[in-house]
Length: 237
View 1 (tube, one colour):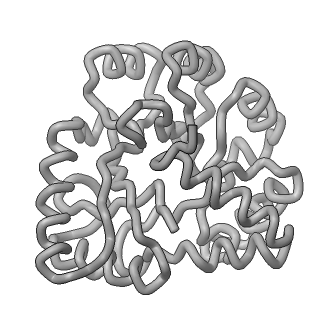
View 2 (cartoon, one colour):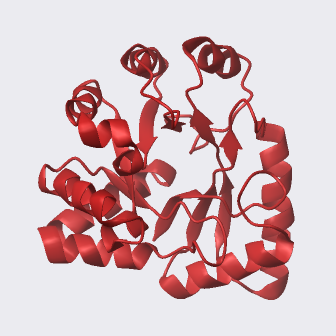
């Protein structure tokens, strides 16, 4: 399995506290069946984790995992917050943040927690003109999406993909979040799954998310989501 959203790198944001915790997270991920992790530290007004800084931390962690014989491959990425339209445009043009793949075809584009950014569709279309598809992380955890699900429908119609978190389907993020995640699944609005793991407690547990999908929507739906997620790192053409 591939985890496209994980705060496994240490000393960058609110993720792993140190290299030892990063290694423990990688062990948990391996035992869960994850073989590739896109490390996605926050890129926000508060956390300016630039692409070069992320790359250095990825190499540091990969060297340690290789030394210890832990068979997980770490890839550079970012969780880019749409602080404002100008924030996104400026940093995209100057190539400050990491995409989810080397070809820059996918980017994890997070909403602010305070409110929905009304420029989101305009920004999404701007990115797609640059041949980059935005992926919306954890929409089920945002209050405004739960209150106005038509916002998600509009984004999907514009070409945005969603990324629902395994913990949400498992109920670990609360009952209201779980119900909305299940509603998204029922509407076929879940394009990708990820862990959004931050530490050994909020851990990489992707297999349980896929198991929830299998129980609720069937094996075929789970396979579709897995294949769509895999094509981010390994496009088939």
